[in-house]
Image (cartoon, rainbow, N blue to C red; front, top):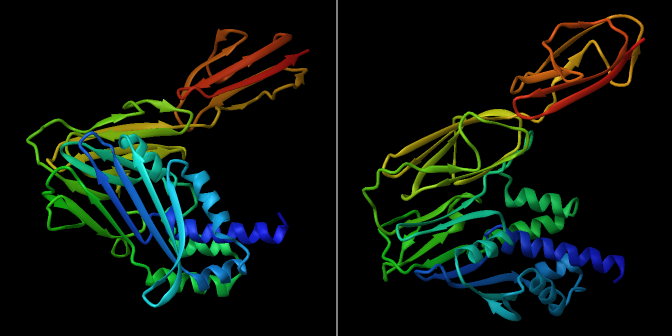
Length: 357
């Protein structure tokens, strides 16, 4: 494929998928959930042909887009048609899928964005996975994503932004149980909820309650243990019999029951359900090796050396010199070959090999 065609294809897919498929801001999404977690997923994406032509110069065919989407959603029936929508010549994409359980449903949503999905006899929730990145704004808008993807093509960005303003961005889910509470709009059948995504933040949680229980069981955390230290990222999940009211991460309330934390820090997390049951967990992520002074790896010395070590993260767990435990401030003067091993409480290990002649 010529380079220009590749570029145009990439651009239209960025627009079509970021704007409409990937972020959850599609035209109309209709989902049906059965008691066993199986169901159907239908999504209709509408984009003006003018926008599509502006993005691609008319060089991307329906078959090209269909093949790409089919690779992304192998279980889906994909159809693309030209239709007049509200007087505008439009390209309409239909995607119909079946899923056998909530796990498969979650996988479908994960092709669009990273979501956590919970469905029980008590409640339903769909929330974005909380995944903060140090030094970055994790709540970037669609326009920000488009600006990054489109680059300096201001005319195209303006066309896309205009198209987004005119979209009817809705999601409806029909549940097997009557809905007693939700942040969407309950329809006449009492079991179907419609969420107008344009009236919500890009990454807001969707929820519906079917029955309120008297359960006093507090939410349970999995993926980390209270008081522990970790030298890798932590995937923390909050499981609850009742719908979660909030998760608090170091004073910040987040709309998620699934958190991936990777930044070095001490974390204090609280989960509370709608019955007022509360659980707390504290742990530290420390990925930095201990600091050693007085000796350098690979060096040879002609005089005594005083070895010092410390760790600002989790603290020193143990240190040894040629297999014998030592404390910081140890002075070594005897000629020989030495191996210093210092390990912190998170399991990060610093090894220094040196000689004294």
